Amino acid sequence: MKDMYWSHLPHHVAGSEFQNAKPEDNNRIETKSNRIYYYCEVSRGKNLTLNMKLKDLAGDLIDRSRSLQVDPGSIYLHINSYGGSVFAGFSSVDYILNSAVPVTSIIDGCAASAATIMSVTAKHRQINKHAYMLIHQLSSGMWGKYQEQKDSMENNDRLMKMIIDIYEEHTKIPKKELNKLLKHDLWWDAETCLKYGLVDEII
Image 1 (cartoon, rainbow, N blue to C red):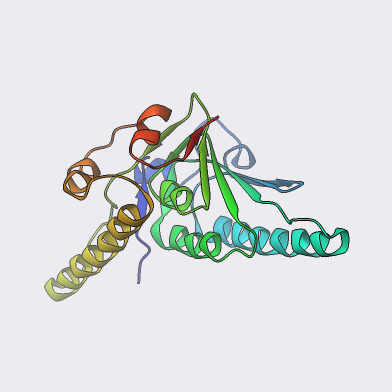
Image 2 (tube, rainbow, N blue to C red; image 1 turned 90 degrees about the vertical axis):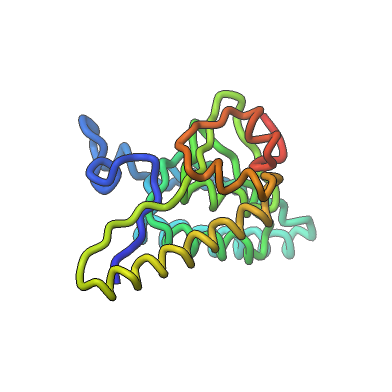
């Protein structure tokens, strides 16, 4: 079973490190205080790290709140990502939704595709004034026997339904517009993201 790809970058670029840069410059997840900085491609390994950081940080904040008898506050998830693996993105959606401490997403620079779906499911969503977001259809390649290709298309349809369901639940994009918008690759500025309910606040 192959992974499904969902990124603004072409496969040969997003599937590898960006040209003329060291790998660690392109794929980093850092934690400082109650903030997680997710500056990387959405991938199985990176999102495992993210999910563990979300879980551990929530536990630390709850322990601190109990000892000091204060509110645990929020986890702030800073996102700068062109997207990547659909399944990796879905895994983090569940961790964000189920976090014992509410998660606030903050778009730094850009969030596209799978990274956008992660962001919109946060309890509170913020975007920096000069940041952009992008939504579009997933990408996938097919090979094998005819029936296998039919199965792949059915799987793609199911994944697209999940993507659409998330956008319908967590944004203000009108249902009639959503399918049309997903067919394009257009970067939305902060004001447009606020208008369509991808974020709650411009900072």
